[in-house]
Length: 507
Image (cartoon, one colour):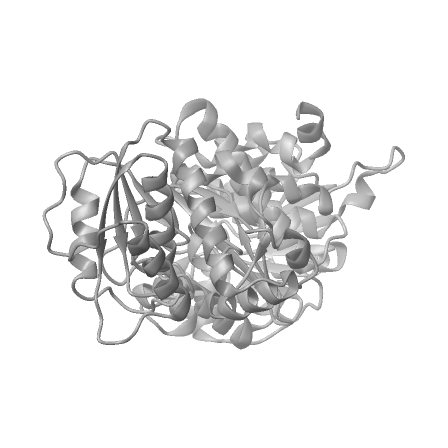
C-alpha cells in the first residue's frame, strides 16, 4: 500500500461511494430535488473549489487555470471568474474541440468572457509567476490515456514548482477504477464534488490525489436518502462491527480458530497469523503445522496451542474449530495439498490465503463459506490474467473473483476492495506504504479469522479486519514512519482498533 494523505481529512469524507457512470444522473436528480438547474449546480461547484483553494493557499495571487472541453472545464471557468473578482491575476488556458461545449460549460465560459476574462490557447506561454495551478481538464468520463493537448498540459503542470489543485478528479486518473493509463496530474489537493468515486480511493489514486477534500454542493440531505452501491470504511466505522464485550463473556464465546500451514522453514508465517488472531480477540487459537515448527511457535507465544499436522489431528481439530484459516506458509508440496483437500470438505466458515490460493488456482471451485484474500499477483493467477490486467481495473477483478469463487473476496493493495457474491462492495480506506513488507498478509488472515469467530458475517469480518489491519499500520507509521515497518509491529497497535470505544474515548 501507499501513503494516503487524505486521512488527515477523513472525518469530513462520506462513507458512500458511487460508480463514475452514475454521477451525471446523480447530479441531475439532485439538482431537480433542490429545484435548481445543472448550471446553478456548476456555479456551486466552482464556488466550493475557489473557497478550498483560498483556504489552502490564502496568499496565492497568480492563478493558472487549465480548462478542458467539458463540464470539468466549466468548473474551471467559474473558478477563474471568482478568482479575478477577488483581485487575483488569472491566466486561463482552454482546450478546443470540434464538438460544442456542454450547455452548462458554455454558460460558464460566457460568464468568464463577460467578466472581461481572456482565454488562451493551450500552447500559450505560461506566466513567469504562478502561485497555484487549477486542474479542470478532465473529469469523471475519462476511460483511456489523455490525448493531445491534454497530455502535454498534464506533464507541464507536473514539472512546474507551483502546487496543483484538481477539481473532482486529478486529470488522467480514471474515476471508474483508479487506473492511470497515461499522464496523470499529481495534485496537492483534490476536491471531490457531490460523491466519492472509486478512482479516488483505489488503484493508483494515492499516487496522484494528494489531500482529498469533499463538498456535496448542498445535496447532503438528498444524498443521505440515496442508497450508494459501494462503501468506504475507515477506523471511524469500526464501532458498527465491534461493540464492547459483555462483562460475563468467556473464551468460548469468542471463537475457536484453527490455523493450518507452516511447512518446514515457515514457522514465522503461521506464528504471525496465530498471534494476530489472539491480539484481535480470538478465544482459542490452535495451529496445525510441520513438527519442526512446534517448538519455535510455542517458545515465542505460549498462548497458542500447537500440534503436528497429521491426517488424524486435522480431522479432530476440524470438528473442534468454529473457524478455519489455511494458507500461511502452507507451501505447494504434497503436504499442503493433502491438508487443503481435507479442509475443503468442511462446511464451516473458512479463510484461504497465500499458498492455499495458489493451489486453488490449479483446481478452482466455488463455495459460499469462504473468504479468499489474494494480493494482485495471486488474483492474476486465480483469474488466469497478468498482474497488470488486475491492477488496470481492480473493481472488475474483484467482481470476477467473487463470481468465479463465491463467498467473499478481499483484493489486497492500496485501497483494498472487499466484495461478496451478493453484490456488496467496500473499500478499506486505510493503510500506508510501510505495509509493503513480508508477513502483512499473514497478520491480516489472523485478524479476519478471529473476527469471524466473534460472530461477524464473513463479509463484515472481512471489512472490519481490513480496516483494523490498515488502521493499526497507520498508527505505527504515525509514530515511526513507513520505511522499516514489520508485520509484527502491528501487534502493539491492534488493541485500540479492536476496542474502538478506546478511540472514541481519546476523541
